[in-house]
Image (cartoon, rainbow, N blue to C red):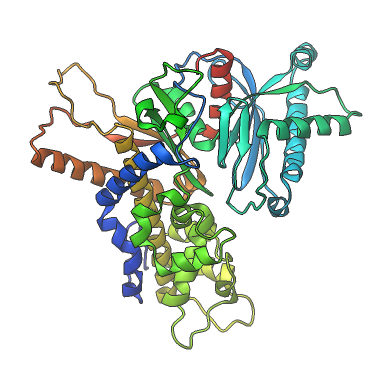
Length: 498
C-alpha cells in the first residue's frame, strides 16, 4: 500500500521543477526574518496603517477577576460567550456562527445587526441557566463586553475603535466606530424582542484584535517570557509588547507618558510588509492577487492564510496536473472552488487509497472525463504540501522578525546559569484554524523556528558570543484565545491595570 507522510511523498512527483518557485524561500528563512525585522522598524516609526499602538501597556498578572460577556468576530466565524473568571477563565455558555457570505458585501450596519441577534441569543441562553436571583442580579447590574475584532482598526481608548478597510472578503470601507455599531445593534435587537424575557444592559468595556487577545490569553496562563502572539487562520496577524522608544512620536502613548512598553497591532499581513517576500512572490501569487477584491492589499496574507491556501493549490494544480490536452475536473477552473479544508484533509490522510476516495468525492462529478489514480493523487497532495510548507516557513520568518524587532532574541544569557536556576523558554501563544487544525502545520512551524534559532546561535558563535545557556522558542496554543483574551482585557480594564 502506498503512503504519504507528513514530510515526504513516497512516490515521484510530476512537474517537480514547477514547484521550485514555492520552495526557494525555505532555504532563506533567516535572511527573510532579518528583512522582516528591518521592515518592522520602519513601520513602527512611520506607518499609519501598521504597527498600530493600542491603549494596553502591560500584560495580565493572573489575578484578573469578574464575569464578562465576550465576543470574537473573525474572518469566517463569530463566537459569543459568557466568561466567568473563577476558578479560572472558563467559557459557559457560548455559541459559534459562520458569517453569512452575503453580509460581507453589505454595509457595516447589516453585519452588526446580525451580530446583535447572536449576542441576544447567548445572553438568553445564559439567563435561562441561572437561578432566578442570579438572573435578576445580572439584569439589574448589566454585563461588561470584551470584544476581539480580527480586522484593522485605529484605537484611541479601550472602547474607541474606528474600522479600517477590512479584507478577508469584506468589501465595506466606510469608517465606523465599533462600539457604537455593537451598542446600536444590541439595543435594536432588544427592542425587537421586547415580547421575550427582559435583557440586561450591555456596555462595551474593551476592544482589541485577535492577535492581542491571543497574547493576553497566553500571558494570563504563562505570566512570563510572553511578549508576542500570532494568528494563522482565515487571516494572519501578530502582536508584540514593544519598547516605546521604537515608535514614531505620533504613536507614543499620551495618556500614559511614563509607559515603557505598549502592545502593538502589527497588521503585518498588509502591503507594508511586501519587501521581505517580494522576490519570493510566485506567478500563482500574482494571478491570485490580480483577481482579488483588493489587489496589492495583503501580499503576505495571500501567501500564508487559510483563506488563500486552497486557491494557490488550485492555481498551481492547473499547471502541474493540467498538462497539454489534459482536461481536469470542472472545479479546478472555478476560482476558490478548491478549499483549504480539502487540502488539509488530503494532507492528513496517509493512505493513498483513501486519498483517492476523498478526491473523487470532491472533484469528480458525473460525466467528467477524469479519474484519480495514485500518481495524480500523490501529485496533488505534494502540491498541497509544498504550498502549506511555504506558508509555515514564511509565518515563522515573519514571527522571528518580530522577536528580533522586539528585542526578544537575546537567546544567550550574559551570566553563568547555576544548576538550580531556570531560564524560561520564549513562549509564543497562537490561535487560528490553520495552526490549530491543518495537519503538520504547527510541527512544521516549530521545526522552521528551531532551524532559524540554530542558525542564529551559529552566527553569534562565529562573532565570538559564547552561550552559557540556550533558550528555546516555543509555539503554545492559546485555546479559545479570542474569547478568553477579550475577557482578560475587560478584567484588566475593570481593575485599571492596562
